[in-house]
Image 1 (tube, rainbow, N blue to C red):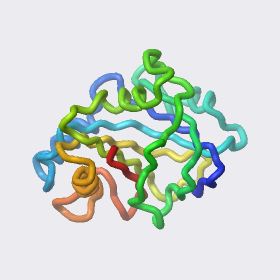
Image 2 (cartoon, rainbow, N blue to C red; image 1 turned 120 degrees about the vertical axis):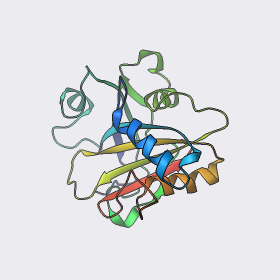
Image 3 (cartoon, rainbow, N blue to C red; image 1 turned 120 degrees about the horizontal axis):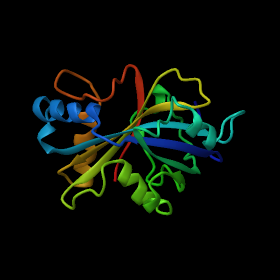
Image 4 (cartoon, rainbow, N blue to C red; image 1 turned 135 degrees about the horizontal axis):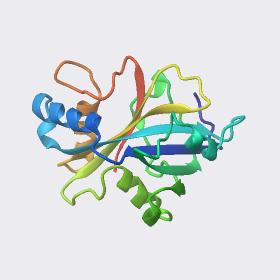
Length: 199
């Protein structure tokens, strides 16, 4: 799906209220079995659902009311909307490109009222809270190929790494993208596209 440069991208991020077993088990495997896993301090995950502009019948309210995207009994949520960066999402041609630092944009709604007016703080809260000073977060969004939309769903992972930004990007990609037996766990590059950024 291509997102035009003038488009507005609306994104729903949801995180578990309790322990996220997917992230917890992935963290253990990565630390114990992957090269560079010893540099991984923490790992967090949000489910992600996004669309561009206002497709027929879709808006932020409908996304929150659709049980497939958000369950108030087990999720915290943040709804964000901002200008799309013009990159093509969910295509193999753009896999591995940089996720813009401004993404996902200003807060539109959340159940975490303390961060209603602070998009950076809400984004961090959904992804495990404030990153320690001696670490760098590496955020990677992945989508399975072949989603026709209008809503594209995927996963946002945050790898908190003991590294400076440049090194974190290199280590983070090697830990995230499965290219051989000792490299990567979170993304299958034959089935998924991804965008990433060391913040």
